[in-house]
Image: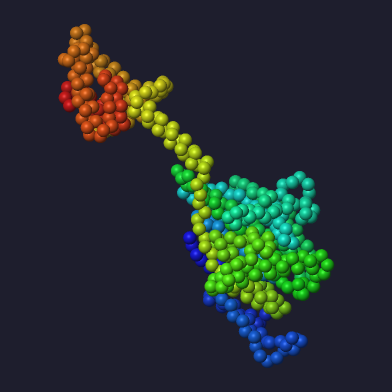
Length: 506
Ligand SMILES: Nc1ncnc2c1ncn2[C@@H]1O[C@H](COP(=O)(O)OP(=O)(O)OP(=O)(O)O)[C@@H](O)[C@H]1O
């Protein structure tokens, strides 16, 4: 188990006129705001208000999307490849750059955000890593007014409004694990498949105009990548999920100036972010020895992010801020929120479990191997050698007979091949005695104690005894055909038999 604090980075949106109240100490990860104090009726007095926040890193205005990926996402992805869950979420007011960070800008290729870069990196790693096989599955969830929708629905009917998408339901099992019913899990075999799914989801994503911004996200969006890996000869499978989360704008209602339906939405957004804040506060208190109850169940978003906040997950937050004078209040409130998040400790573990399918496959393979071994040991083989196998045996025996190195092993293969090799050996031997008389031949064929095969038989018996004494395994059948034992043992017997044939004795 790896206990670590949630890492927090702070990203500043590029601005032609950043507030003079802002100062960034990038190397130290410090952001400071110093501005005039105002009275409630807006009058400025002479005293100053000073806020100082320290984070794991400041992502300055001119940082490239590639550098953001390297600093923020790469360490999380490396852990995901090891089976550890990861979450990266962006939090900040509308228009501060959350979507730009998580998904990216649409205009230039180099503006690709964390999701497409993560997809590309993961597929590259799947290809390069030789330690196992990897698979990726993708889900895309949108939470709007506390209801979940599957953004990757492939239903035929056109999606013109959010309600056309399948509604996702939360289920909690008896162990307290959250399950998302009706959320499709889509396999992506290659980078292109994953990018197509991202595109499909983004097309289904519902956006609306608000006075704060032309295109404002009123909902929370979670792009979920499930990475599954198996090692060769292992019965276990590692499954990690990576959440890339683009939260709705965190600004307060009064500032958005919206009315009617949009105000209701804004309330919901505020409410769910308020519940998120409550969870963060409770976790912060828990980390300092305070109350234990964390109100995850209050909203769908906090329920889904339960593991990411104080649970089994490596989590990174990117706070985003617009730094013009008029946005300073919101930026400071984002900093406050981020500071509390930074105090939360998560306990991430490698998610590894026994896979019954892998276990069955391995046991079946093992059983087949054992059956083969048993057959070999029992000398029982119904193996029918093909002509090319016989040719190979011939070459093996011929090669073996001219082998200078007497210690060289004989590798026959299966029992059937060993028997064929012995048959060939006998054939060669008989051909080398063309002048042998009938009597001689019968002597040779081992009738009576004095025959060559009789000697051979005695020799083999002695050998059998010797070898069996030595390694308890070898067995030898009566005639020159049909030994039992391992390849090396065959080789040992065969070598000595040949020496015997050549008149050299044992
Ligand atoms: N770092 C950046 N570099 C260049 N452009 C940026 C950057 N951050 C944001 N922008 C631009 O600012 C605009 C608003 O950004 P974005 O849509 O990412 O905000 P947001 O926080 O996701 O807002 P919302 O909460 O409404 O979804 C976009 O046009 C985006 O391209």
